[in-house]
Amino acid sequence: MKSYFFCIILSLSVCFNRAVDVSVKNSLVWGPGLDSRATLPARYFFIQSVDKGGNNLTDSPGQATFDVKITSSSGRVRAWVQKLDRKDGSFIVRYRMFASYPDLTIEITHKGKNVANSPYKLEGGVYHETCYCPESSEEAWLEAMNCSQMYPQIQKDLMPFDKVDLKELSKEAVQRFGKHHSLCHYSVINNQVYRKTYGQHVGFSMFMDNILLSLARKVLLPDMEFFVNLGDWPLVEHNTKPIPILSWCGSDETLDIIMPTYDLTESTLETMGRVSLDMLSVQSTESPKWPDKINKALWRGRDSREERLNLVIMARKKPELYDAALTNFFFFEYDEKKYGPKAKHISFFDFFKWKYQINIDGTVAAYRLPYLLAGDSLVLKQQSPYYEHFYGDLRPWIHYVPFKRDLSDLEEKLKWAMDNDEKVKEIIKNAQSYTRDNLLADQIFCYHYILFQEYAKRQTTKPTKHSNMEHIKQPSDRDSECNCMKNTELRDEL
Image (cartoon, rainbow, N blue to C red; front, side, top):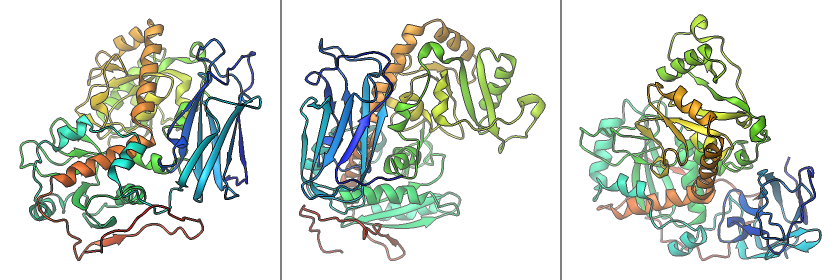
């Protein structure tokens, strides 16, 4: 339930296991939620508790360790605030605002004393998610969001498309993919979004609509025109004429331009909203400590690939190693004698009661991988021709343990993990660190923006708002105050 306060006070809490001498001077506070310019659906920052000897605490110091108070000079602050205890001495504090303010003050204290550089002043306008107040300076927005200058995957994906003739693209994309696939033609003109869908199953256009509208509220988008594949499988095969199609999943045999998946993007937009599983909440699961976790590899899912069926057969033969079961049948014939009874769904937050997580492809890449990497179990990942936008950054034996596509060495890799606790813990920490640096909300917005920016540079003809396109309007914000203090004057609409 959302709670509204004139002054929002959040006590960070877990039960004390031992007395800890936390240093207010040495403890660290950082994150985009402390910068007014970094508008996110749910703003967040981190607190790392440090003792007086300068050592980071590695266990939770307890729920009463820190207090967080958020106020504004304008009076009432409407927000929902949550504390997430990562159980490793650090905390995530996140807050979703339901109105905008000229300023905020965030005060973080321990036993009444300010921690690190508290209080933190956010000035110049602090805007909530549905406030239309785009930054007109591309450089200022990129700096505020701490975006990378370029992403290697974007460079790789755009390499075949040095020049994009939009008139030619409009004809060819529809001819090749508009009838038997789910396709969406977008135009962004003067920061307004327009689209036309092709094919029967186009409901997933809402995910693309949502990220475009959200970005447009935060920064002025370049004028551009592009096509999005709304299906699972990438479309542009190597042995065909390459045309730029944006997709959520790539493969070694295709040339699609890859975006963050609709699942990861939607969880970013709906953090502290419609979704419970996101890249922040998954970091604070109530999982047991390592020695108390179940010493098996876990997998749950539907029958969307033959290797999944083979995994379940392996698990039935060696239940001392695996806890793997199918939750639903759609692609293959259900044979209970062979695969066992259908298993009940397990909350994703309960996955981490097991030490080892098996990530195996579905129809394409398994989109659960970001959340598995963020948790505190080891990921064993199937070798795959499919990939998400970040897979190129990951390194086997650094961020996960690989196994062959046909599962022939999975048992060997699992037994290695069971015999190498310290190395496994190091891999888990590397994976968690990677997700914190690369897959949280700020970087998901950055990736989309830089992709659109680089794509727009390659357009050789002028983007057009076509007559058959629907105007996708910004959501109503009538119930919230949104007094934009930025200069958001746009060119007259073409």
